[in-house]
Image 1 (cartoon, helix red, strand yellow):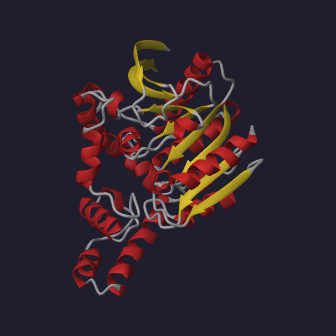
Image 2 (tube, rainbow, N blue to C red; image 1 turned 30 degrees about the vertical axis):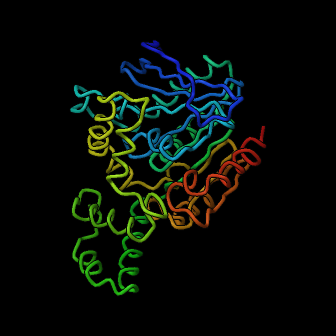
Length: 334
């Protein structure tokens, strides 16, 4: 692996007065492609954590920064933009197949780079949403590289999850006597090709957001999302634009993978500690499917935590409880 470029700058004033830290942005050549990572550290040699974002193809870092999430209190955190996303998006690559196998291998390469650079034998692996799909596969393949696997917004069987979401928003519209919404929801077709149906996707996004079961319990509009992406200080303007481009091209290649497979069948065993942190009101990846994954998995140590006031992002919606679990439970295994 080749380090193409690196820069460091002081952390902003979210860090307490007497704490010093750095944000390091690096471009690495991973399996023949330039890819970007951002490291956040308080320079205290804490355990490493690799954060696998969702989408597929939508980096979480700008949203993390906009909401003041501070995982660097507990870890030296690596936010990697996966192949085809944000800092790792390249126009010339969009017509080439993007596969899960590539992303699994890329992830392992990033982990090995972090282990070597920071002289740590293992890292913590945190997957969010699509990142739980990728992370579960990586942890299954190379458990010896990780202290633990942490799934947030855990994927199980996507179609069953989506069916549950469709029924929930329809039932909610009817119960609230929201006739206009009920009519729109009933009008769209939900079948095995739901992930290709843009009309269904738009209706689903609108009403999961409206009914507090989408990205955040209190709602998270597309405008707010774009505002956070385009105000992120550690991305160039081109990289911000590439977040949008990459989300479309990545979904083109990978949307069907999540929509048509069952992670419970793919990953029956994880030979490392497993922590599942799930919002009770998550209808992006439902609590039912997260619990199903948790109950099915064979692991030497496993725990599941339900966030009663969260939907898809408990690290944003209930940060103090999230931090408490990171400190007491996750780091407690070391």
